[in-house]
Image (cartoon, rainbow, N blue to C red; front, side, top):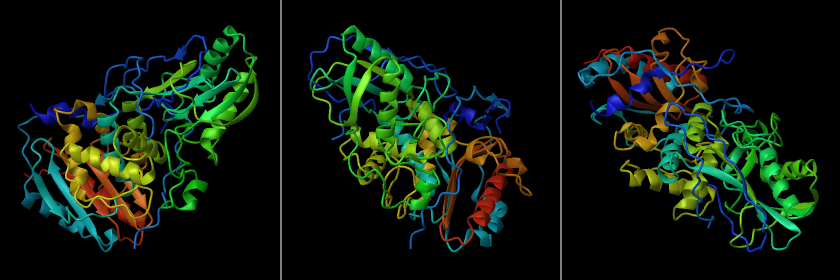
Length: 496
């Protein structure tokens, strides 16, 4: 059939393991003859694509609003690549009837008038197969999206970077024989130990990079070096002025850098966010070199010279897997990095402002209506960002299109109601059980705002895209429960 058949997997539930609820290039001119050591174990296949190759394409060098207080737990210090989902519903068919506006209104009117949704709510319900808008209110009015912003960031990253892109962290020769340079390419999910090709967080490891670097240095007869860190792929401040300081303290986001350990931590497994994640990673790397017989006499920042040969490198997980992690865990730090990488590849500066504009430009170039959209960065954590509900549903419909298989991770990464990610503990309220397993959606929560946007298979087997955004609420908990009830009602709707 058409689009819906291609995304029948959106109605599948990934089964979690038992017991669980750019490569930036900087050039350097040096005549080092050290061999190149590359750690690039292929990642296993995920639900969105076959196993990637180990090649990497280097990007060009980096040339009253709600208070931003996320209520989600910080991203975990480890992650897993979920096994392929097992279908729990019959395959979608083109013969499933399309809900009518009258049927949807009868089913949803009372729920959409819930006082918990506060003083302003915008919503849009769209048929994924046809793109027909079925029911809407304020759908073209820009409202506070919170973390549903990540839907646009996901599509932009997959479109601009490509789903199979793998971000490289490299070591290159410095300006003299006594110096080497650690060059960040956008991977803020490094492990301090060895990389694990079965994971997204920690897919690439600094220990593997140290192995390759030490081997190359020893082969060249060098056992003492100065280590420089080149984190110039991004520019501008590392911390957004639109963030609440409490978000950093709580670990909801880290200072943005082109390399770091596990979303900005000082070391693997450390729950605390480093004040300077890139320098913390470089310091950890220097320690690892010391354990391999290479004496590091100093660590500091410095730009790699031009046209340097790579001494050693490690490659992160494919971008499609990083996008799935970002959506499932609502990883703000990863979202910010992906948005900046989109800016690096485009014609915007790799700053918070430039990243926001680059994401909007990228989805607009694909035909998504973005009138009135405005935000900085790519996470939705900052104050002042606005997106229309119609933009959110159009982004979802685009990701489901057979014309854009490269965007599919936008759908497969969505949390599953009552099962995975930020929806794992939701849909336990009265009348909400029917949504479990059939609603897949990106959550959004800021002080004064609550949102949900994703897909749902209705009782007739029709795949719908929906977005509900309430941004003048007094209780985000009440608003979240009201929105969940709307999505659950859609799942149980035979509204044709």
